[in-house]
Length: 119
Length: 107
Image (tube, rainbow over all chains, first blue to last red; front, top):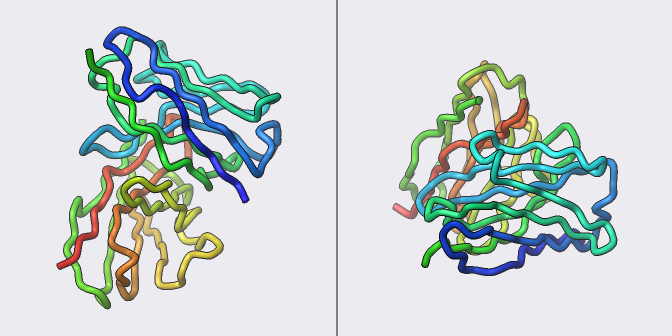
């Protein structure tokens, strides 16, 4: 059974880099059939797509965050990671990782990790 | 970017009610739309994909439909487990976007 679990610091200081890892179990992160992504939800707001990565290493990022986002994969650990630089209070959110079907929708999500950006 | 306008933002209903949630896309997205159910502290759950396809294991009281750029999620008879937040999601083109969410509350 597929499981995705987010992990990382729950508190980040302003101007520092927010780093999260998603550990995937029950599926290979190297599969050509899927892509992997990050989505966040700020308090009281809707879901916001951050970016996605494919097994080829190709990445797509939300233009609103593009210059600050890096998503990478560790095939040996069956994990993928998010780095969001220059954090501000506006980056305070629950961050979800997800698996998507290539050419289609996200079909599985992690339960999310709350990250607060505060001094 | 494709904007997804979801309505209503909050909906009060009773067990057994028929509930309808609407998402309007700012441009054509063909049928590339999914619906998710969210509960606090839980992973969002896929309900519907490609506008009207029921995800395996999802009760048949959930259904999706489309008319042009307007998409609808219908719960035919609301059950206690259905009180949650529902979001639509277009995957027609990048950047991927979501509706603002609809919270279904107990009346």
